[in-house]
Image 1 (cartoon, rainbow, N blue to C red):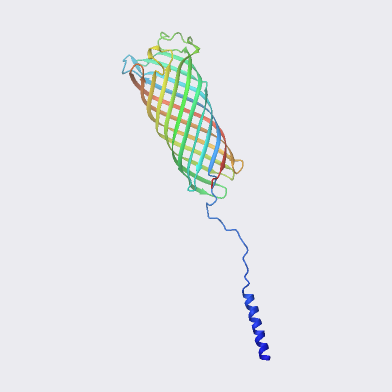
Image 2: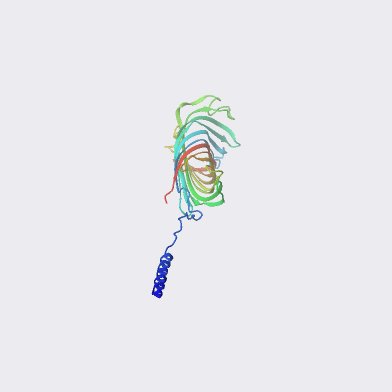
Length: 334
């Protein structure tokens, strides 16, 4: 009997021990850290920008090979002080590999400015110099770039990103000139009239100039985040190829035929610069302000389309400089 009691106690102890062995302690849940770069920055950015600027266009026409009594240059036209007010739509998109596309398209109106039209005989004797008032017409432009982001410095509150890109730009300006006032020349006003006299009333449209540039851009965008919400951005682009087509309509020159009666063409170069200070108001909304400068130049040819005459186009230059402000909204797509 004692032996049976011992066996019962031993069996009970084994069962209790087996039951105790099957109890496991479940570890408490904890946050698993994400790999570096898993929290991608906003992938899309859309916004509106206002750009105020002042521009000019200047070019020479050399007809001396067609008429030996004419100078080189024969005519110099300077469109200056052309103010512009423009509104543009801006956007950018980045994928998970940090390849991006960005751009803007805008347009507005031109206001004010002057045209100085000078003509020369051989030896650069100025036989005509007139002043015309400019009345704005329109400004149209747009840019598309594609590139890749490279982070050079990455810290908790500051970083530096360089983003080389390649892109295209279109830039068109149309201005109208009114009236003609005679300026001093080298022949005592024999062709235009006394200096200060009005040869054509300022209510009469005398010329329209439409200059269009189509360009290739090679450059880089640089972003420096100084603290949690403030970013400095620079956009620097060389324009190795800029194609120009320019149309002049001289309304009072019936000898030149129907308008446009002069067409200019050429391929040149230029550069485009932009700088911005940007403040992140929220995680999605940002406000920015900055400056922008565009420059392009070329040589080429001038066609008097109704006369079948082609002359040399020299030193055609266009530039525009101004300040802008914008508001943008950023969001992620994945």
